[in-house]
Length: 288
Image 1: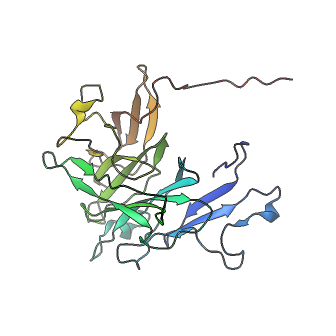
Image 2: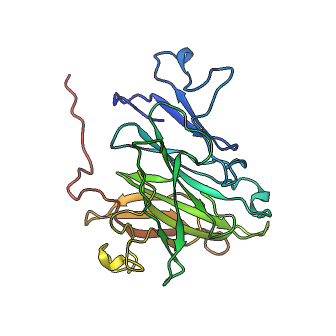
Image 3: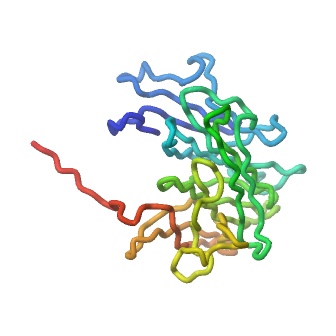
């Protein structure tokens, strides 16, 4: 749900479905009877956007909650990943393997055409020096023309998907991917923790993660001479949570499937781009 006008009452609901549709529902009216789909009609609703694979035909299922961030030039960025890991058969990779993606979609009040024609592609690759680190492109996204967002396909690992809710802090998008082992009897797999610029989908200006493990996030965390955007973590099907440590820095926590699936936790020092003097708590004083 999204509060558009800042009155602490939800105005819009965004939701995905297994056919790749991103729905926008207007609930800004004072009565439930006035609530309706933002596009189309109650009898013939139309999605805000439909996510499809690179073939522009095969729908990409959405099983996570979209996240939002204000676009600096107006409108709202809707951030959503694709993937499904609900049934036992989802652990068996088909041939050809499904391609899942992450999307950043700018909502300015109009639908976005299905497919990728109005979206800039950002790419993800493996570091040349460390296979557990990922590098993301920084292709320019010019929203002044027909461009309405960005997309990133995950094809490095077979069956890689986004099945846990992402997190946004300021303009940094943090999410976890999961690639299952191709076996109906295994609940383990491989996961990567990703940190991107939410507006462009490209790499952030500075490092998000503490790659060298010294407790400080700075240029020493550059990989292959620049900012890296992903690191391998213990396999998890849980989304990231962000906390603030005693030094005022960010800490990202995710769950962990430890070998036999018994559980555990990942903890990563991070820099979400939060201003150092930002208020971290507050109290509302009411007048009576």
